[in-house]
Length: 312
Image (cartoon, rainbow, N blue to C red):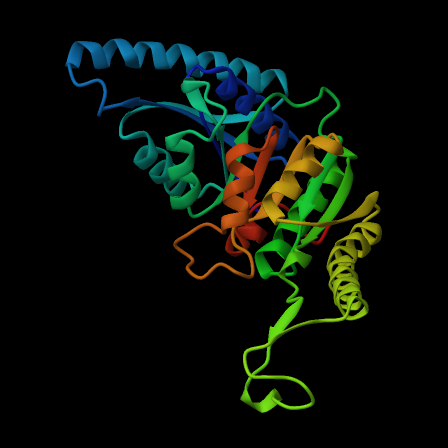
């Protein structure tokens, strides 16, 4: 069986250096091969002499990254300095080597708290999975992995991926589902068909508190069942997992769980049940990736079998 191919893009930033460590750990633990690239941005550097100097700087970044990767016993297949638009070069190189995962810093050299422009475009445009790195990885590996799930196909693939990672790193898993019970309609308007018995057209009738409570509990129970399915799979693989159900807006609640539970890696599907277009990342995933304080892997279901042995 051919080795998995992983790609890491470096730019000399702190987050980029951290991405190399994450990529190296994955490469070693899955027996993959790692390609390391640096892109000289041709939209910024146009003078040939300046480009040449930047290529030399890029070679220094690559050598540093190669040494780091080899310290973790990762197999480095090649290192390359490319000249062009960073997004295009990263995505094209990933396609060229048939990469399963792209690793890169979430914020780049801007040091902004939000996802960088290049990372955002790669996330949307790449055909493979993408890991956006924030911060380092514990020496012992990932310890607490969060797998948000909504029962969608991509969420199912993300769960398989997250559980494989958890098993390899002996990490604990929190399987979460968020339900927004504020969507419960607590009142209704009387229509023509409902007129009578003291009810008039257009009247607003508030539902009994007992009925609202039952609907809320029904939604929470269904939410727990969705997360329980991930827990059951985890237990069948010998992975320690727990279920977390929260009531609220999905993205903010997921981010709260990350902070409350000490999560160091989130594994989330590229799209969810509510995504209308495959051209757009699911809005929940996008919000989580944009501001999560830890690293996030965005899983594309179509590439699942190319990343890890999901049936191990």
